[in-house]
Length: 572
Image (cartoon, rainbow, N blue to C red; front, side, top):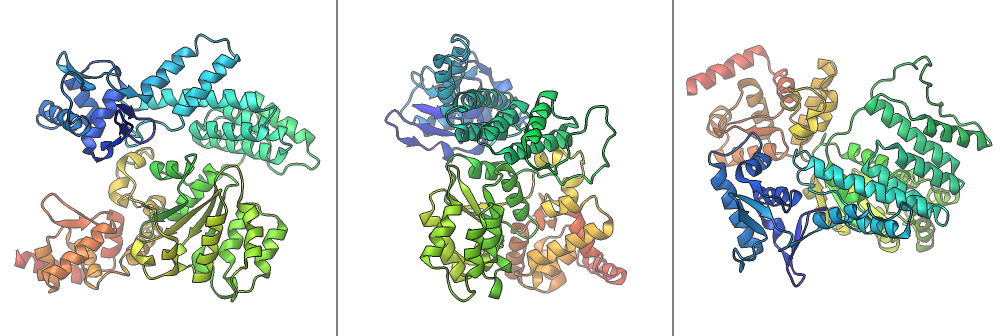
C-alpha cells in the first residue's frame, strides 16, 4: 500500500489499484493527513485531536478520534488486522508506520537527508535534486492550506522543491536557457518572495537575448517586495537590472528602483488584494492542467478577478477575451483580445481583422492563428462572460482546442444552467469550478473582524466595503439585483422582508407574503444557493451580508417598515 499526500490525497493498494481515500469523511482525511505529516512518531490522542479540531473539540473527542481511525482502517484496509494496519495503536495514541505503507512525504524527507553526503554541484547531488522534483511538484495538504500543523510541512516541501528547481535552472542555463527560465519561474511561483528565483529567471532571459523579459521579471519582484513587505530588492538584483539597462539600445520606461536614501516617490493608491481561490489556481497552474475548465459563480463572485490573477501567475501565457462584446461586426473581438494579450505578431492579428462577421474563419486561417497558441508550456485562452459566444465562435474555439496541444480553455459565466441551450454547451464541461464566498481564513489577513459579516464573503463587496456608504450600498444593491433577476417573483420580496424584519421562518414569510409554502421554499433555496441568504440554527433565514441587507432595507419607507413589524408582531 502507498499513501500520497504531496498534492491531493491518494492511496493505492499493493497491486496498484486506487483505494477510496477521497470518499473518506472530511475529518477522517484530516486525521490521516496529520498522522502522515508526523509519520513514524506516536501522536497522543489529545495532541492529534487538537490538530484536527483546534478550538472546536467535540464533546468526547477521544471517541470521535477512535471512530475516524476505525473508518480509515475499514475503508482502506477492509481485510486488515492489527498485525498489518498502517495506522498503529501504540502507547495510548496512534502512529503512521511507513514500514507497513509507503508514504511519498517520507520518501521526500529521505532524499533531503541524502543531500548532505554528495559534494555541492556533483552529478550525484543533482540526481537527488531531480528525484526531489519528481516528488515535490505539488505542495502537501491542499485541503488544509491554513492549518497550523500543515504549515511547517508545506514550508519544508516548498524549500526542497525551490532549491531543486534553482539547482537545475543553474545547470541547464548554458545548454537550454529556455528550460532554465521555466524552472526559475516555477521556483518563483512556489516562493514569490525569494530573490534567488528572480535572479535565476533574469539570468536565463538575458541568455536568451530577451532583455525586456528580464526587466519585467525585475519589476515584478520590485512591486511584490514593495507592496507586500515594504522593502526594496537587494543590491545584487538591482546591479543585474542596471546591467540589462546598460545593454539595451533604447531607454527603458520603467523607473529604476528607489535607492535606500532617496526621497520616497508619491504614494499610489493601494492595489486591490486578491484573496483565496488557492485550489482553483493550483488546478490550472499544475504541469498538465485540464483542457477545458468552466469557472462559474453568481455576479460579484470574482470570476473576472480570477482570470486577472491567473494572468499574473502565468505572464504572457494568458489571453482574456469577452464573450458579451462579440456581436455583429465585433464577432471576433474575443479572439483578437486573446491574441493581443498573448503578444501575437501583427500578421496573425491581421488574419482576424480581415475576417468578415458573417463568415467563420477557414481552416488555413485557424492554422495560422494556432501558431500563436503553441509553446512549451500551457497557453490559456480565457473567455469571460463566455455564455454569450455565438455558434461560429464556439466552433472556432473548439477547433483550436483540438488542434493546439498547448492550448487550455478557461470559460467563465454565472450558472451551468445558463449554457444548457446555448452553443457553448457543445464544448463540454469536464471540469466545473464554482467560486464560493471567501472564507474567514481568506479574509483574516485584512485585519477587519467584521468584514465577513458585512460582505458575506462576496468578493465584489469585499472590494467595496471600505468605500463611502453610497458606493458600498450601490454595489450591494447591484449584486442583489443581478443575483435575483432569474429567480421567481417572491425572491425579491423575501430579501426585502428579511432586510426589514431580520431572520424569518418560512411560515412567517408565507403569512406575510401570501405565497404558498412550496413556492417560498423554492425561492429560499435559490437565495441560499446564490449566497444572499443563510440559515440560522433555528431554521430561520437571514441576509448573509449586512451590506446587502442595509442597501435593500434602505429602499423601504419608514411607514412600510412599521407596518411590516406590526403585522409580524400580530401574527406571532
